[in-house]
Structure formats: C-alpha cells, structure tokens
Length: 463
Image (cartoon, rainbow, N blue to C red):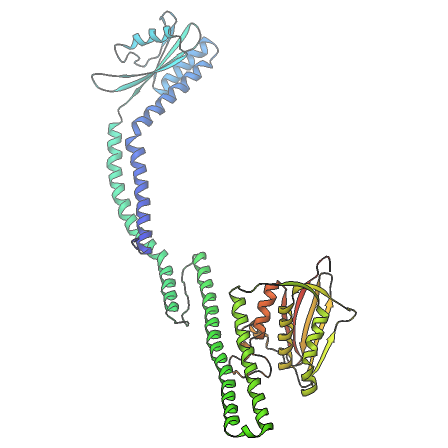
C-alpha cells in the first residue's frame, strides 16, 4: 500500500532536493573538475596563439608577433629550423625541464603538423604545456606555458563553498517550508471544503485567497459543481416526494371507491359502474406515471436506442390531434394545426418516440394554456430544417425559470399538485428524446402571452 504524504511535505522535500542538486553541481564544476577545465582552457589558448603565427606572412611580422604575444600572454615561444637550429626564442624561460630538447627533435622527425606535450617537474610536481606546430617545411614553433598550481585556489573555493553550502541549506529549508505552506494552504482549504460537501453539508462554499490562476479557476469550477449538485439533490428529493404524492393519491382513491363498491354500491349498477370507472382511470394514471419514470430512467442511463423509420410528420401530428379532440368536446379546448402549404413532411426518425414528444408537449400546452383554452401546433420549412412549434396562451414562464423547466417536476417543485393531464415528467422525457435524435430544441415565453416550445428536424438531401 502506497505511503501517504502531505502536500506541504512533498513540496518542501522537492524544493530542498532541488537546492541540493544545485549545490552538487557547483561542487562538481568548481572543485572536482576545475583542474581539468583549467588545463583545457590553457591548451585552447596556446593553440589560438599558434594559429595566429600560422597566419603571419613575413619573417619580420612573425618576430613582431612573437614578441608581442610572449610579453602580453606571459608564455615562452621558440622557432627552430628542421635541423634543430634556433631562429628565435622569447625572453620567457623555455627550458623548464632537462628533457625539453628531446621532444623537439622527436616532433620534427615525426612529420606531424601539431602536437601537445604535458610535462611535470619531478622536483616541484608542477606542470607545463608545450604545443608544437609545423609552420612550414623548414620552420617549427614550440609554445610553452606553465600550469601554475591552482591547489590554493581550489582550497579557497572549497572553504567558500562549505560556507555557501551551509547558508544555502539553511535558507532552502526555511524558504522551502514557507513556499510549501503558501502553495499547499489553498489546496488544503479546498480539500477540507470538498470533504464537508461529501459529508452532506451542501451550504459549504469553496474559497481561495490564492493569486494562482489555476487555483482560482479550480475554486470557481468547484463552486459551480456544488451549485449543480445542490440542484440535483433538491430535484431528487422533490422527485421522490412528488412521485410518492402522485402514487399515494390514486391508491387512496382506488381503495376508497373499491370500498364503496364492496360496502354500499355493489347492488346499484349505475353507481357501481361509475365507481369502477374511476378506479380504472386512477389505475391508468398510475400506469402512465410508472411508464414515464421507466422511460426517463432508461434514457438517462443511455439504454434507449432509436428505431428509425420513414413517415409523414403532418399525418402523425393530425393523428395525435384527433386523440386530443375529446378535450375539445368535453372542456371546450381549441387545437389549431398550422402547416401553410405543406401537404406532407416526410422524415426519418423514431416514430413512437417523436409521437411521445408531440403528445407530451401538447399535454403540457393544454395544462397551462390561458382562458381561451387555445393550443396551436405549427410546422414551417426553412432551407435546412422543418421547424415544429407547440404554443399555448397561458400566463407564461418567468425568464429565470426557462433554463430549468426541462427538469423533472421543476414547474411545481415548490407547490406540487397533480396535473390535470400527464405526470409532470413530460418535458424531461421530451428533452431526452430530442437529445437522442440530436434535434435542436428550445422554449420562448412572454409573461401573460403564453409559451412556445419548439424543435428542428434537419432536412436530408433526399427529403
């Protein structure tokens, strides 16, 4: 099982390790490799001087160059012929060691164009570098410089680095601690707030006094998530309460009328049939509610699929209107169907589900239409879509509620009552079916003027 560490300790540890890595880097390059680096630098320098000699054209310019370089760079330079005779020697002490002449003859006879020799004084253990270069077929240059001991310099650097290391370690421990606290504090605060929400305290607010943009964005996102979770939790509670209410009422009525039939009206045919019809109607209402809940549940867990078929939308709407005509005859409702010059609208969709969409929207319109009891269905054609509208003439919907009316029972969540028709789940089912079809949908409303639900069916090239 992985060992757990706090965010503060993690940040502190990594910052300290980073400081140690920098100190290690300094020790490697300022103490351990400094001799090698010094030797490499000196060798490169005398090679540059040799290159300058090679570019000189005349003997006069060579000697002038040699004097200047020897004086400025504090090096020894000797020019010899192919037989070993010296033509020029700078004022510097070239013959540093006894075997200095031996290697000159070896180099001249080797045929090499250049070579670097490193000599060590057996007595004092100090080193020098000699760079031999062939100027032309008869002239050879030998450039020497002392690798002065830098042990004292290294010792000073070591002592200095020990002091610097101690100071840096102390500062890194202290600074890393405060940085880790500063970086982890808002995250820990957010984590504690999340734990309170997980415990059911939905009134908790995510707060961050950090100026880090990512943490500010995280805080805002978590607050939005908390708001949505609160809405979901409230809607779930209301759904359970409302469904319980809708189931309890018909059950109570069924029981009451069944007892009437059993105890009082079982001998009176008219009364008995009336009571039995009420029982059947309440059972039908319960069946409708249960079916709507099952339909909605299947859609929300993506268990429902589309069974596409080609059909006439106008014929489908007309058939649904015919079923609603009982409300026109019984209660005086007016259902208007406007489709202008369209005699048929052939589409490919899931006919049963689209029928449920139109049926639920019409039920909603009938429930909320105004005193004129008018419901209008309109189908219009644009360049790319068939636009379907179902309008009522009711009191309208408050603008702040428009985005939430597709939620289950939202319209009645504070003062729930049973619908005259339907179950209160219709709009949520409509939304899920239209999303399943990928049909754009929406709603517009004006206070006192009514509400219009709409959706668009894309026109295929073959339509």
